[in-house]
Structure formats: C-alpha cells, structure tokens
Image (cartoon, rainbow, N blue to C red; front, side):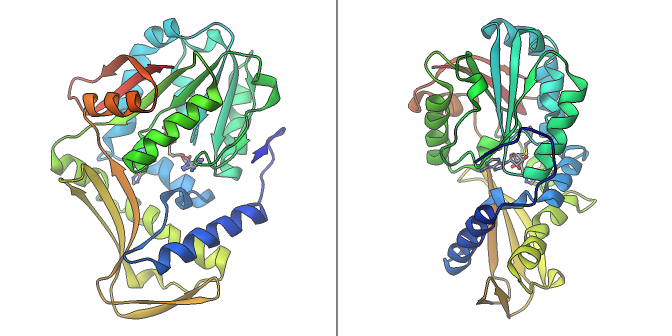
Length: 321
Ligand code: SAH
Ligand code: AVI
C-alpha cells in the first residue's frame, strides 16, 4: 500500500509485479484457466477502460452519470459535514466531479486504485480543478487490507464505489468486500454504491462486445501486459475476445479464446492451450435492486435509499452501517 503525497508517475512496485506473477501462475495452472480482472489495469488498460465508458453500447457509465447528477442533492443530505469521501477503484475520478452538491460537504477525497500511474495523473487533475478539498490518493489493492491516510482518521468517512466495479467480484467476495469497507470506514459510515442491473440479454452482450472492438483490445491487453512485465511470448493474434451473458449466473463472462493448439511461456513457465480453450478473464455480475440490497444487508449494511433510471438499467444504492 502506498500513499501518494505528490502526483508523480510511478512504475509498478516490485511487490505489485510479484503479486501479478503469483496470481497469473496460479490462474494459468488452474482448470479452467483464469486471471483476476484487477490485472487489466496497467496504464494502457486504464486508458482503454476510459474509452469503453464512452462507447455507444456501454450504457452503464452514462446511465450512472445521469443518476448521480440528478440525485446529488439527495446524496448530499445523507452525508455528514466535513466528511472524507473514499472512492474504491477511482479510475478517472470523473464521478466525483458530477457530485457538485456533495463537494461543499467534503473536507477530503481519497481515491484508491491499483493503477498507480493513472491514479497519480487523475489525482493531480482533481487537485487542479477542485479547491477546498484535500486530495489524498492511495495506491492499493482494495481486496486486501489497506490503511487510510492519517489525515482522515479523525473525520467522518463515506465510501463511494461507483461504476458497478462491485459486479467484478464473485457475490460472496462482494459481501466480504463490503464487510471490509465497513471496517475501514468505521461505525456510522455511509456508502454509495453503483450497481448494474439484470436486463435484456442483447443489451448486455453488445455492451461487452462493441462494434469498434475496444473491449476486445481491453481484454487482449492483459496478454500484452504479461509479455511486457513477465517476459511472456503470447501471440495476440492467436487469441480472440469472447464475451457473453450467462443467464443462469446473472453475469457477463469475458474470456480469451486460443485460436489454435499452442504453448506459451510466461514468468519462466510453459502453458499449453488446446484450440478453443479459454482464459476466463472477468465476470461482471448483474443484480436486481432486491438481490443487491440483500447482499448488502448480509454484509452488515442497511440499505437506506436506491435511485435508478427510466429504463431500469442501473441502480445507485445508499447504505448505512
Ligand atoms: N470508478 C470509476 C472507474 C471504474 S473502472 C468509474 O466508475 O468509472 C474500475 C477501477 O477500479 C479501475 O480504475 C481499476 O484500476 C480499479 N480496480 C480494479 N480492481 C481493483 C483492486 N482490486 N484494487 C484497487 N483498484 C482496483
Ligand atoms: C470496471 N467494471 C465494472 C467494468 C464492467 O463493466 O464490468 C469492466 C469492463 N469490462 C468490460 N467492459 C468493462
């Protein structure tokens, strides 16, 4: 865990690289092969995700943006004055900027992200654009224990987890994450969480397999990252992006499918692929309003409000401890 005191670009720390290697060797040795989606986010992965958010097929970002803009006054009423807003997986911090009515109640903003270089750059930009709020970025994997900067320990804390990033956890891990967030934020905390909803299969499939091929590049970039950081020899043209909605499990699955029988070396180990075999790179779970509220309650949070859009595509939940 690193607290960035200034907005400088950082190369991934040696410990981050070894965590990547460890996850990767375990995941490629498993059957079926898999890689945790948090490893998508090197600088190029973060840039590609930002491009995804602007795609016509990718409805979650524009829908959540609209809900947050409209509901910012309601959100502001739920928050204590002088609160520190802790954003889990802050990416471009774009959604903080939408919460105009919330900003005057905040004393600090703590963006937490695994993508160190991108976080430093975006935190600097927030610092330039928004005055009167201390911007205290933390480079951390939020699936592990991490500490908040000492400056916010005495302030009331509010969690912010937009973008439906919670959908990238297995449901039991999402509940565990919410429990851990509760411990980090402390008694009486509020949490605002954006959650994508179950909907028409065709809408979901298009959102994860866009016509311009940006999501395919995002998915394949993880192979490029392994080549660069772990001495891999993946041939990107020998794999293809596959994404589909798994109706029974309420989730989009993303895979990288091997187009031929091949052996690839990475981190000093050889892995064989049959033609058609896949690496499962991401799940993106979709919830109903009630199924998400039940999950939050199981993790010790009390749902106090839910805001949604006219199409019932997305929900923003307010939870209290
Ligand atoms: N909150 C932004 C970005 C969502 S994209 C939005 O709503 O648009 C998901 C973000 O979470 C990325 O910036 C990624 O780097 C970060 N992320 C994913 N897994 C993470 C993990 N385990 N720990 C910390 N950050 C993570
Ligand atoms: C970050 N996360 C919520 C995105 C999602 O929709 O699951 C990641 C993503 N994967 C493909 N497109 C977007």
